[in-house]
Image (cartoon, rainbow, N blue to C red; front, side, top):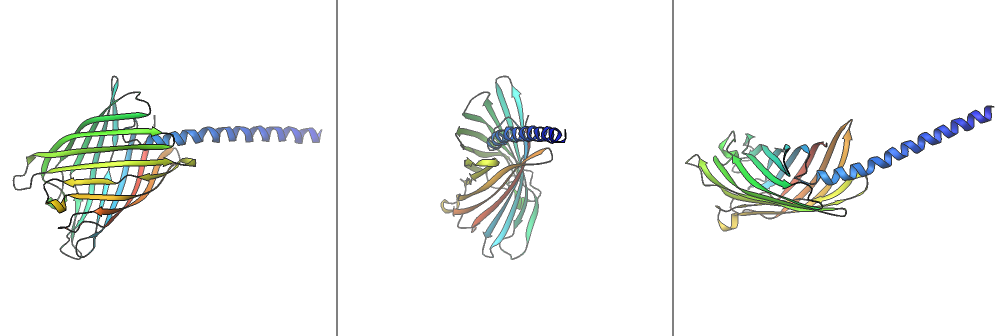
Length: 272
């Protein structure tokens, strides 16, 4: 009788182990899929990225600038289309590069991007729409002082374990303070992600920027680099964490732009 009880308990333990293993195996594809979705800037998913960029080696005193971008993404359904609303609210510490210690801290100019994307587009998706820059800076050293707008576009491709794509825009000033310079700037960010096991991934997503109003040798910032990221959870909250570093191969000469950037990002994910 005692032997049969032990065998019975053994069967129950084996069954519980099999069920737990099945749940774990079922969870892995979900995390892998979420990793790819989180790497898609126009995914139909609410998210709140907090991206901190620390720029090193600015000016003759090798000053450091810090920009925390708060970037909520709010999708909306419009029939056979989605409208992906992306906001970028920068909280900036900008050093006074002519001094060793002084600087300004506050809110920079808020950027809105709205991408109209077709539903059910498969392994390749795209979006087009407007970009609007609002002169919300709390100090004139942290913003343009101009209202600006222009076109924006994005394309994303899923190829096996790869997520590839690019997003870009150009904005021109059309109103604002008359004593501030005209604004004509563009940005292109390509991204190359390779997904590994257990929701880890390798990433490279440098932001190339151009100021068309600047002299020839001061127009471009062209970085190269990359890093690592992972999807994880704290309780029921899904998160996407990422650390990367970028060296500026091209930078403005006149203002002695940053040598390199350390990016730390944490994204709160709210999948449907």
